[in-house]
Amino acid sequence: MRVAIERSINPLLPEPVNRYRIDTDGMVAYVDAGLEPLPEGTLVLVTHYHWDHTYGLAASRGLRVCMPPQTLESLSYERALEGVRSLLEAVGYGDLVSHAEPYVELYKRIEDSLPRHRVYGLDECPLEGVEALHCPGHSGDHHCYIIGDSVFLGDNYVPYTTSTTLTSPLDYMESMHKVLAASWSTAYPGHGDPSGRRGLVEWLNRVSRRKLARMLEVSLRLGGGASLKDLLHRMYPQAGGATLFLAARNLVGYIRALEDLGLVRVDRGVSPWVVEPA
Image (cartoon, rainbow, N blue to C red; front, side, top):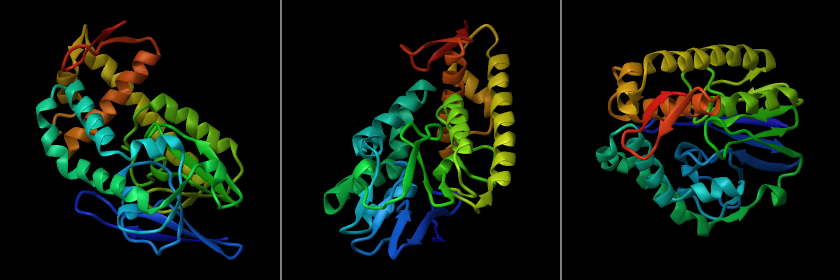
């Protein structure tokens, strides 16, 4: 099996995004659609719904696309808009929803393109020899794929940063333990360069330490209780624009993890949310 990296850039992205061309047994397939058009008839295996990994669907016609039902359901303008609105309301910035329109509009184009393609569930995907692992963490629908001696990790692996955005640090750690228990030799990330097993383990150790330290910092900064808006600016004093959205995603992920551990209580009936020690 031969794997080739194709990288694309977009003004809304701080770094290039990867998609992977796989040549195996006379068949050509891709892991993720990236941003650029693909030839008609191409088979694409999608790791997760985020637009930088799926916009190639909107730019193409007649693809064969394999994805789990959670990903298909998430490729929706209304779902994307509601997700942005809910997140911004959680941190007290619901009035900024309109600022996310250039980002949300991309999902409208992807959603509108789906009838042009043939969409398969993972259990009926024409690409043989694929082991699919549900790997929530970066997003709830995220899947990792083992093909031959390679694992394709999407945005669960971004080797040049330990600030990777997670919706759930606890789910993420469980997912990556599942990946490490599997058999493979090369790890392919959603952004950045591939590595071997040792490189992934070393990076995961750094990420885990950072995420646990940030969860502890949230707990300490919480004091006797605080609004999520106050916590956001305590944790991320420089956040603004697009970084405000990313900071909010990370903070909500930390709060959910602390809540799952029974360490905090969250009042979601107000905007911004109010968090207090359990």
